[in-house]
Length: 334
Ligand SMILES: Cc1cc2nc3c(=O)[nH]c(=O)nc-3n(C[C@H](O)[C@H](O)[C@H](O)COP(=O)(O)OP(=O)(O)OC[C@H]3O[C@@H](n4cnc5c(N)ncnc54)[C@H](O)[C@@H]3O)c2cc1C
Image (cartoon, rainbow, N blue to C red; front, side, top):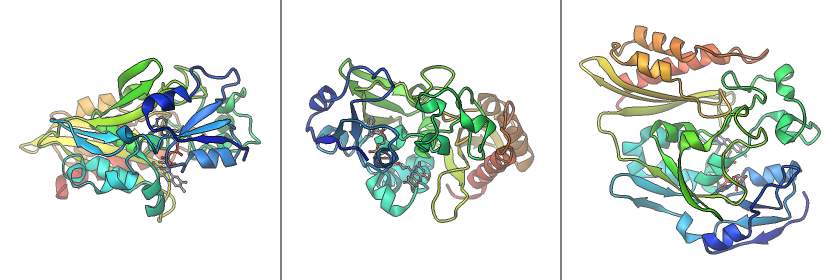
């Protein structure tokens, strides 16, 4: 790992001033924010980039805690993933979010990792993570996953890069139509989670979010609870103890008289962004809340999937997860 300076500002203005206002020509950054360090330190050790300065956000009190906003909740970017999982209000009213946070990594990592860092973590594709592979995401000319080892890569929204976004929390936040508040030298802005992430074909392929180099996530806003809208998060992982998702489903359903009246669904680890199969959400409305419908909805959700050579398994796996999520919502007290 290269040497770096460490700055610990106590206000957001100081923090933003310590960050660069524009991207370096080579796509690197002279300074970067660090929160829990669970992703960034790994990336630095792998020497994927080498900023001269790290700006630790831990001294900024505005970025911490949970506040009730009148309607919903405002979660500070420095909130630990473990605190998101444990908060009784989140467990009661935004259940899929608590379940998603609980599924992240191990207890030790959840106690260190922050909400903002989880949303901004870099992809896990092993070509990206290997300093020996000058892949497209690192400013090279080729996505090696396309014709190489792609078991964990995208089946939707891929091209020219086929990474999947690794966060478990992002799909759950998108399910609740949460938004992030950011601060930068240009001021403050509010972005829906669906606007925070960007497909590789739509913008600079070396980045996963629309955040500028001096733009920080200050907080995440959860809109008011939606009575009768039951939610859950279901994740498939290779290793039983803790692991990134092979595929995941954040599902929300409202049902009345045995029929689905509202359905929202966001898939994780199948695309470079949290993936919302809108046609499946619409088709679900009016269907009976029963296994035959769940299978039909899941099939619609998988329409348009374009598996690579080694990840075709994600199609039946994700279908199964969707059906499991519907079953859990109908049969379990969630
Ligand atoms: C073994 C292992 C298993 C894991 N399993 C999972 C899993 O199952 N599910 C999952 O979702 N994640 C998993 N992770 C990833 C882990 O959750 C993230 O590394 C962690 O959440 C990152 O948070 P952090 O606070 O440590 O971020 P940092 O490492 O400090 O930062 C990560 C990135 O975010 C940027 N950043 C941090 N805070 C902000 C902010 N407020 N505004 C703008 N940019 C910011 C940093 O510059 C950096 O680029 C795993 C990690 C490990 C090491």
